[in-house]
Image (cartoon, rainbow, N blue to C red; front, side, top):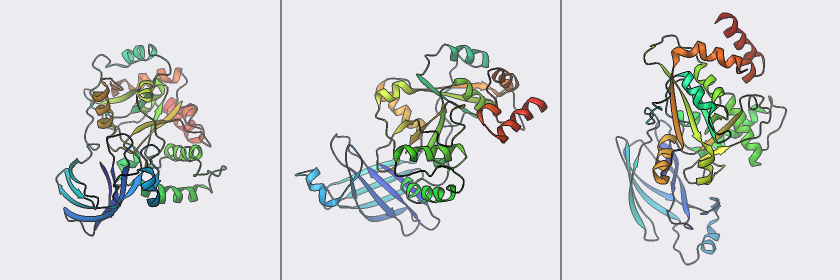
Length: 352
């Protein structure tokens, strides 16, 4: 069960999802809206039925044909009780089904649970390690701090991705048509992904997370931001490495964020009007999960495999790292084609 709730001041609204562990069973999604902000709420909600394979909403009149002989409820009564970081849920339906659940609030605003690799603590040791990796298997992400993985969309106070798709994306699309030469067809999945990716690269909050095929491009993004105050003993940057090949072998990759099970998937979007994608060797992940690290960690326990590794390197090595990356051709000018990238590169080169 997953609940995505937006805080709208005097009330809360969003979507609730329920999925069965048994294969072939339908999922359910329901819109809800509270009348106030009381910590105890009783809600009567209509249920939309989701296909167990495609996750498309099944028209109500087709439900008996898809699930013959099964009692599929059309509504439910929920009693929600919020205490601290746990939401207690009790439900019952006209079909005679009922149950309870305890939903913990996402930990995505907490520090990362992934401990950095103890064997790789310097730039030189990371370089030696990266050069020895199997090409094409891993993807990388550079972060200026050892933050927990979280998309820009989920870092906002917004959580309802259905609202994001139905309201925010069309508004953004209308605005950007004056700026783009290509008219993106949002009904075509490849172009829709390209549009999201373009917006993500220009700072718009999306449920995508930026990655690169290159550990050295990731290092540039980790060390790139300047800090005004520095504690040489403790200031770290983080490089995240993800075993893309093993993950995509073990788990289905979904290219949607609403009306679907929780997932974390890899997206290699078309680079339409996105000049940064190629030099950055960029790709993205797409997810409907707020706390990405807890989700990946649970899958690691489930599979007995390691998908995610982190490396924390000292920020005090910044000047040396950026100098070496410049010799590799990794600079602001190469990664950000255009006026801004060229000026940033020359500022760093000439003014230090």
